[in-house]
Length: 509
Image (cartoon, rainbow, N blue to C red):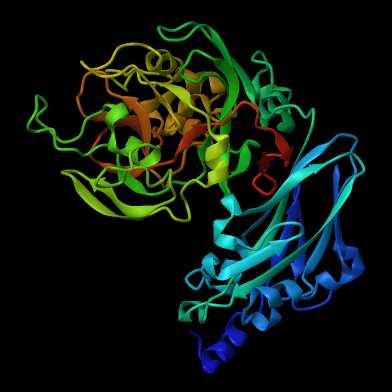
């Protein structure tokens, strides 16, 4: 139980939720602050929705002094009231969530002082009292609004009455996020393909606006795929930023994606903007078998695969930790070495996992990197040439880029053009004569040497990677390199706002 002195300390340290921000369709509004705001700040208009706050709701959180509070007293407080109005002509499905305000956490320098959400109770109009920790992906209420319809909500938050001393000295910063989708909206793939440039358009002749959008690519049939057309973002910094998993990701493009059952749909393929850390692709001990070395380039059995995907919770280390937003030990170097890893803030949320669909990933390999261009890699990835006993494909949720993804993403540059970059063997991209190939490739990151999903065709533990110099080459599977997860989103995903820039990333629902 809290002492009186402890309660006084809570009054000082839990002063209130310092800044709860309303984000709705790309707009931001300060809901709870320590100073009053004029009425003009209490309305946010954004296309089909209008979100307004009561005048009295912009200056206080109403946590009853931030002391541990009984449920009856928590419900008796005034709370904070806001109204959502559908100003569009179609029915809109909405969700309201209370998420961590990372900007305020950084500004307040309290990332290591976060109040456990198991201590916070909330009530929002028409619902039962719940713990914030029990909300799925932070969602606190959802529903639909007909055209012209409005709904008003009052949110009340308080510290639960039996909070322990663990709550002392802790902070909480949150933001209300309102997402909405209108009936009849085009899918994200339809929205983005409509902006794509024709394959015949010369990159150097395109306008600056055209260069920022996707480009069309046609491919001949391979051993595993029919002739296909896909759409990819290319260049140094196209408009392919997307908000996913409460992080910045990038859209590789739109691809005809097999879900593993033979059903093919056009789906978004995205990659995390930054690495989740440096880990081994596979460092299991294979010296007792036919292969006298550590690690194996079989993705279906790779330890990195087990780390990223569901269904491997029984593993002694790393199993499904990224997928389950967990913490434990991960494989980090050769010879079965492990290290502590924590994905409790960077792993996949429940909402994000629901947006990811199964996809068929092609595991065809290559016997060399020295003579291989992006189109050649594309064909070999979807081929059937693999080291003896290896799989040629895998169906799952989370993978990595192909070499061809990296190669096709270049636009060339001042010294070269796109055609010459695609015609150059990608292992030469650190050479000064073609350095603009990597410098105009948005996937390239000079601070990350990153894993690729593609194995060597004839070396038992060699896996392709993108070097920090820009080359595509081999690494031993037991090495530790950066990991940038790649996923195929469900075909029904829609773009609800954003322009694809870093400052205004696409928001998906």
